[in-house]
Image 1 (tube, rainbow, N blue to C red):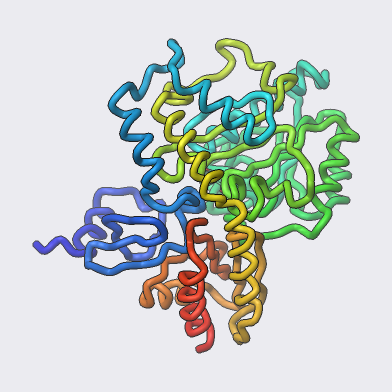
Image 2: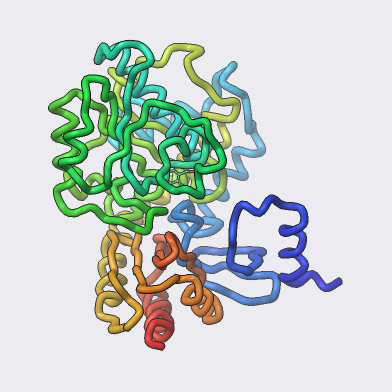
Length: 398
Ligand SMILES: *Cc1c(COP(=O)(O)O)cnc(C)c1O
């Protein structure tokens, strides 16, 4: 049998659990912003693996660091030390301005880690009675897929069949400062949020919301916990999306682009009075902090800084968004976003528009039914954006 797309799609369907509804494009290689499928088609990737490949697919600098490290040592476990982790953590903390970092693998694990350290801080520092800590979260959130994290999802699909749920979470509407204020009790230890809700449909809160939320947290001695797994590391045109409001999270959660798509690397960043509370045995991960992940992470940060990807995201994002806003289309309800994290909300399901773009050589994926998300690798050029926009305009015109 000829090994075309259909061949691989049938393998996936037969042998894999059906947890996703992907576009039927089977990618066999990629470089920069471009991906190539098994049928010989070429596409510009406007999703970047949910912002994991901000540095572009198969970035040569990260690849070189990874292949070099792979030939030395890949995994030591934290039973022993290695010569890569500390070097990477120093670089990460110096870039971001935090005292300490703890490496994990997936984003969800980093969120779990943030929840655990925040609860421990609540009991040991704030003095909340044991096992009564509450963390306030936002409606429409996406923080990952573990049983604890889906316990405070508001998405039926993510949670309905998977209870019983972990207690200790209180949900308020995203962007509603009065609701946040009302939800605070003496048991509140943290406020966990995404500065822009990515999976929720690229929801941008109104200006000043995060600053007001931060002030409330300070006033009530509550940790301000930013999940910047998707928005962080340049995606929104600042190093972190909270930088747009000149605030600093007490607990910062990052992942995805921390490895530029080569390897699962995530981390929780915080200061000594918080992350310093973890004692040997409190938390761990076999692969967390391994030398391969550390080398990859260090290279991914170097690319971010040396190629000025944060600045590029700000400049090209403003251009992309400006042109989208000028499109006159009966289908478009709203265009929103920051930097190169852009959502176009339609009056109808976005799937057929994504499929039409696929026909034209552009990959994007609908989120929350009616929203097209545009989040290309930050290494995209203005010419490439012009090319993409020509097609978006055509698809939205009729
Ligand atoms: C992707 C994502 C996660 C989960 O990361 P995984 O690596 O898939 O576990 C958590 N929070 C946000 C905001 C994300 O975008």
